[in-house]
Length: 196
Ligand code: F6P
Image 1 (tube, helix red, strand yellow):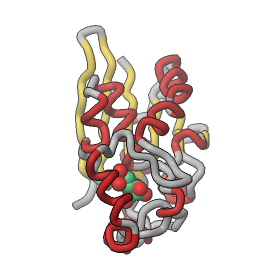
Image 2 (cartoon, protein in one colour; image 1 turned 180 degrees about the vertical axis):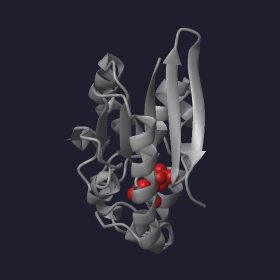
Image 3 (spheres, rainbow, N blue to C red; image 1 turned 180 degrees about the horizontal axis):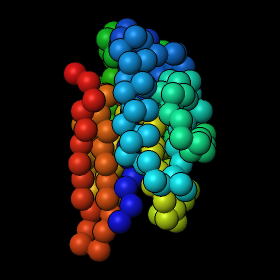
């Protein structure tokens, strides 16, 4: 069995301000996580010559991968970018609730199917992840996936065999690595919380 390590990026400046989407750099806590993650990955994948590190194209994931040495190739996938909130990109949930109450309610009612105006829905994200999943399945070596909350909910649900309707509500905490092992007896999961 070979591991797939899933993690969100380190805390971003927008995470601190409660703003969704965007493309900000890491907070101090997020930067610390990036360093702890690199230690963890370098140890965990020590003799795994063919392992690779996959990020999105957004700086918070690229910065989170930046300290990882060991010569592992780093690959950027646009398909791993966070759900795009369209006209709501950069807003807080309170701002959406106040300025666009219908949108807020519609999302609350059906978070899986709700599509942000000029943006994406969870179903859109699930669809664009298909090539990533195919490639993950094909890999023989370990892969570290550094991505975002909504995207990781969908990826995790695929490997952990969770029903579609649960996807938008799965908990994927910051600063935690979810290790998935696929063996003959099924999927095993371990979580490593590197920081509070
Ligand atoms: O707040 C972080 C974040 O990754 C946002 O960029 C994104 O819009 C959101 O989480 C996705 O989570 P939810 O679907 O619960 O709003």
